Picture (cartoon, helix red, strand yellow):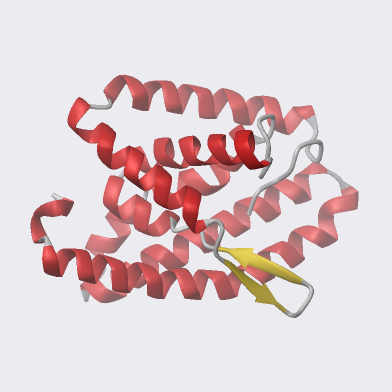
Length: 193
């Protein structure tokens, strides 16, 4: 779900970097020392999960993001974890890239910060856990499609295809989030307070 270097116009990249830069700065300022290891661990989980690909229709693939799970576990700090993970993916492997880092962080990080609220406000809880994983990807796919759509005429057809291709991933991530959070709460119930 990365937008590569050189795809987006500066009118999209610059405002996205401004918003992302402010958000990351505020989150770093508010980050408590006892939260650093948890954010680092979920940055690593995000980084590694992106290497797990699922083929679609024989012509493309989607990869895990786990932004719903990260959002449930970290709340607003999920944005920071996703930023760090995307930074290292862009730096080390060229996934996304550094100029599009602001946009990619907004696309994946913004929905993640609301997933903890969704997961624990919907009853029964297992439905909330599934929806958190599902909606994080669905909203990110919508934001990705919207970004491509706004970028120019040449990407409008691609925008719709990208959204449609991420719907199966949203279902997969919904189930992964459901099982992961249920397991975590079973073995360590106080971890999400």
